[in-house]
Image 1 (cartoon, rainbow, N blue to C red):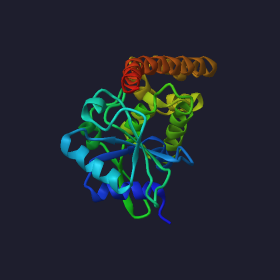
Image 2 (image 1 turned 180 degrees about the vertical axis):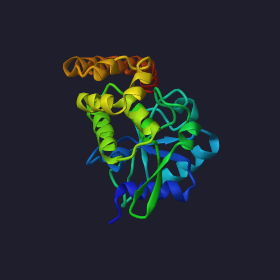
Image 3 (image 1 turned 90 degrees about the vertical axis):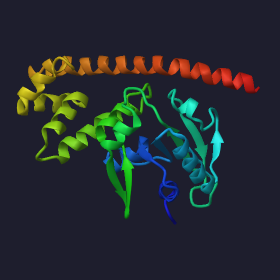
Image 4 (image 1 turned 180 degrees about the horizontal axis):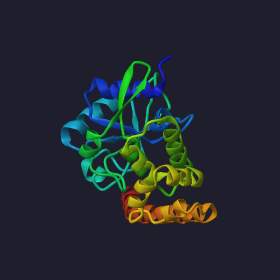
Length: 245
């Protein structure tokens, strides 16, 4: 039996949609997660692509869940559109579609740096690791351990990292031990990142307890920013529900 995520991906590919895999399924393929029963996609928000997305959803017999409807006016504000598949090859599988995420660049920019991740023989356009991590900086408890694992896996896997790899780790690493290790291995690159991420100074001086506290404070700030970002969007959804009822 085909895995539900492959049924969804194949429907998107058959209909020539422009999409990027993100969320838990992308984390599985990057080695940061073991299991998820839904799929998240960032999609190009224009009339032609939304028509193609709608055709793929019809193939999957996907029914909308909650608000808002799959329309550009909502996607462009940052809303997510949710569906549950009813087709036999993906029954009960959830699809979440977004076009705009807090902290992430526009779709076309993310498309240019996309990564092709593979399931069986299928190459799946996906958010780059850098953009996936940005999209994971939410108020949800489960996302922060995921960010940590994604960077830890990437750090362990790359024996000959590029300068860009190192800069990504310096921006996003959440493991005090690895940050201190990078301070020893890449002190000049770390020093160059200090204006953007001052807590790296604690890594350079190997102050692990203080560094851990600074990482916790950094996470709290991102969670607050995400709550503020979603506040007006949630209020708009509530107004839509009241209007419908």
